[in-house]
Image: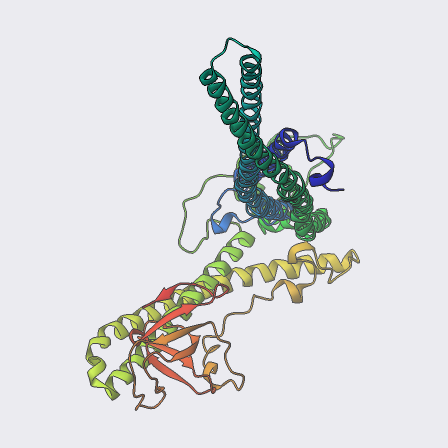
Length: 548
């Protein structure tokens, strides 16, 4: 079916229909815009909700209970889910709404062009019709004038009273009118033939072509709408796998909730290490009252000298009766002796771990400074080796202070563990008498009746852990790339020759010594001055910044 042949006389209706098509396309574009705004608002509200219920916490306040960890995992998954809703909104805005608006502008321009062509063709045909109609009317007037002149001539010719000059004048007027009528006839015939020819071209060539262009435009608009409907759905479909992973992560977090482990964490967090208080002795205040031999009063055991057994002294147990009362506040001491034994042991171990980490940092800094000093000694033009000595001395002083602190805390820890071990041995003998099972592990690694595990301290970090870093046979992975700003001859041992604008792989960042470890395309490795290169780290590496 063709608009050009079947709708040759429906120009105005096709004008309205093409306008309706563009209006409908823009209406759908408006729908998509409102839909993506809903997605943006939804994602924003989800992120605000996650931020509200997952506030920033100090490191010591990190959740340990499985129920809390699972909840924060769910919040993280929900945050990722919100990110996918933002992706949906962005894709809808770029691939659907933006494309629809651009296509709408193109359609408007094309429709305007086709309609202008149609109106021009119609105006030209109307102009031809006016020329034909004017020549027709002129021909009609000339014929009437010729008929009128002929009647005058015949009347004068038959009138015996008419003079010869009047008859000749009427005759000449008749010939003139007949000649003018003949010319009008010829002009009318020519104009009529021209109009018929232009009309045929108009309805068989021009209009069908214009209407066909409008039909093609409308069909392309329909196809485009179908594509946009599909793109609209594809945007949602593409994020379904990631959203499914987010939901699976939430389900996994829910499965990780462990009530026994949480109970173990409560024990580990609040266990004091004290033994329960012993029985209070009976204090007999009637010992000074004289009794007869027949007195049937039940006697009470007496302690030597009439004094209570010092093992059961009230004063020694008074401060331990915290079960139903408030624990007395004690001043914070450096050795943490104000804490219960178990809590003191944990705090001391945590403090030792932190000090070991700081010591390792100082050792790394010392090694880096020594390396820089060696480089400066071999290349005096790069710097003064003596300027690094104060910093090296300061670092060594810090290391000694840290070692002293570690030794002091380890002695306190050994003291706590020694006392804890003696109590554990007493409990162990009691447990043997009661046939209690041994070696069961409680949730979250809390201490059990297995004393071989109970007294095992966490592994201490090896201060020489990174001494063999450069002796590893496996090549270090590239963490970024760099571009040489200047040439470097690399004449010293361990350095690498590079040319200006040469691109190399970065395998180790500058540790503060002014040198960066790089690798060439051929696999050759070495150090180059950090100030000689422009470094770009990869996104997944720490830092991910550019140094110049």
